[in-house]
Length: 171
Image (cartoon, rainbow, N blue to C red; front, side, top):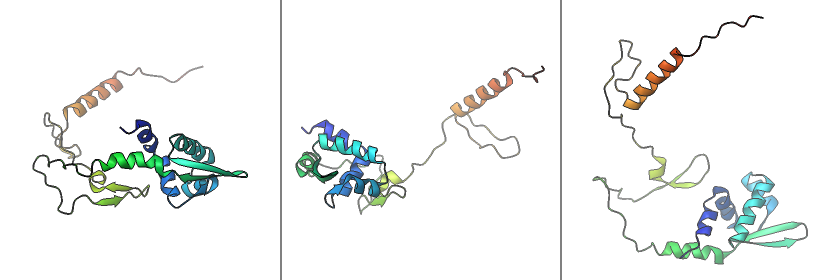
């Protein structure tokens, strides 16, 4: 069984970014700060956590600390994931069939991370079941509102109607 702490460590996006950066080779803390755009204390904190999980190693040269990937620490994760190579994929739900091409990777625009295509697509929003409410002529109100939205609007109107009347302060 793989140590759950390793998964907790790599769950943080900044730590994964540090690991990605260290794939190119040893780097000093200052280089990681410049490359990742985070503060030095933040990078140092994450490097300490990665070092305690045996995912990176550190060597000192004078005032500088250089960090490198520790392949032995990452072998735990890759060994655990290798057990899924022969796993049978789940059958499609509700008659939906997967693409013939399989999952496609998509680059997230903000972070540059690679995401499965299914994550980047927004689910369709269906109207909630409930009584149909129609607009009173101006067409600005949707034809159908969910029951909870109707209740919230009613409660908000009631709250505003019952607010105390504040007059102008007189000295």
